[in-house]
Amino acid sequence: MLSVEHGSNQWNKNIILSIIVIILFFSAILIYLNAKVTTGFDSDMNHSDYLKKNIASLIKEKKCEKCNLSEAIIKGITVNNVELRHANLYSADLSNIVMKHGDFEGANLENATLISANLERANLIRTTLRQAKLDNAILDRANLEGADLSFATLNGAHLVSTDMIGTRFHNANLMDADLTEANLEGSYFVGANLQHVTLRYAVLKNANLNDVDFTGADLRYANLLGAQLSHANFTDVQFEGAWWVDGRKCLPGPTGHCN
Image (cartoon, rainbow, N blue to C red; front, side, top):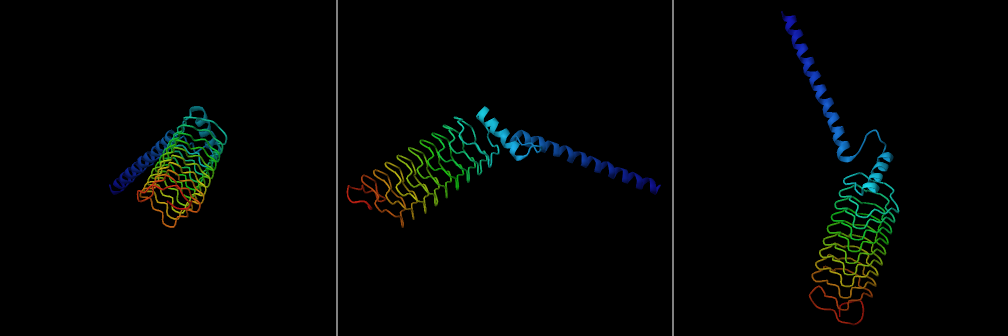
């Protein structure tokens, strides 16, 4: 009798173990299928094939939201009105691309190369562009509100009438960039290089400009009301018509300080 009960218990345990194995097996399949649907990733593909698939989708459908294009080389293509919201473009090479009106909101472009790229009127709200290379890029009338461009290079870049409220430029290099009429209210520029930058009519209200090098910059008619300027270098800076931190309007006169 005892041996029968023992055998029955062992049989029940085997059934339970079998059920658990089956459940785990189908759970793994569901996770795999869900990954393919939501990200387009197929574990049978190597990274190179995966990138080719996503790039093809990007060019054909002008859409690749949340997809992985890290380290992809997508130089010189023209895809206006593209949708790349929350996409991963870490270390991607996007040199000379034309993506006017593109939607990059929340995308990761850290360490990406965007030299001479045309992103006019693009949506770059809350994008990560840390250490990105944007030399000579065109970002006129784009929206970079809340984006992070810390340690990025934007030498000679065009950011005319660009919205950059609350944007971070910590230790960024913007030498010779054109930020005419840009809205930089509340932005963070600590340690940035703004030598020979054009900031005519730009809004810099309440911006943190401590330790910024403005040597040779043009700040005529800019609004600096409430800005922080500790240890900033104003050598040869033009301030005519600018609104100073205390509300004074700078008069014509020698460069280097608000007259």
